[in-house]
Length: 265
Ligand code: NAP
Image 1 (cartoon, helix red, strand yellow):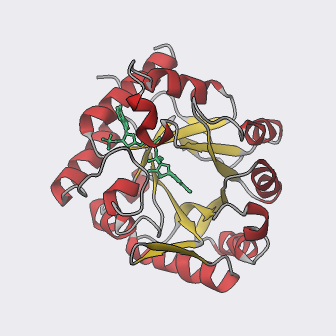
Image 2: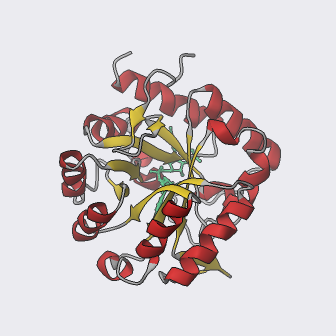
């Protein structure tokens, strides 16, 4: 099957080129306190290895993870050994998930600690992208030192770019005024954050989309909504990539086919 190799998009002004579909990895490391339609088992190492190999074969070059995704980062480290340069790796700071509960720390000190820990877990010496993992109070979260530290870590070369994974229009726009990119919820059911996409387009900033399939709830809507969901997302010219979470190889293949259909190849 044809892959996404000829369809990379610019991530704002970062100079990075990303596949229009990225791999979300919540389900690689965490199955508690998540909002997916069905309960699931974490994939085995062999299944995870095969999923990542398939993603790469299909032209995907972007993986999204976070400290709050349970063992996702520490599993990805060994799984990506020997292929670091193929991938644009995105992780996050600010949310910790321990003993079944989230807590948040947006301080400068925690931000440095978190990025250095992500580097160790992911077995690398740089992260391509780090997003502040908001608790929903985006403006307050942006004002507690994390963004200043991300700027500094970028100057030090530990990260190449940074931004916000937020929940509000005001937060998304405020973050884009100070950073490279935003991760935004945008799907057939929820489009309230569209002004963040429009702002990004006008100011040459990067946009990644989370929950493009409404965390899988869209897929319960009867008719196959994957193509229409991805069409909505990829038609907006600010969008660099839809980060779709899956641990199912057939779904991954279907999602790539849907993207290719949307892009008219
Ligand atoms: P999503 O990508 O909208 O949906 C994922 C769900 O859809 C999974 O349960 C998956 O199940 C299912 N799915 C995927 N492709 C499918 C297909 N072709 N047919 C049927 N079902 C399909 O939602 P998400 O995982 O919440 O978000 C995506 C990624 O965005 C996450 O993995 C994470 O990296 C990022 N994210 C970030 C934040 C944040 O920063 N606050 C929040 C949410 C998400 P299968 O495994 O069975 O395919």
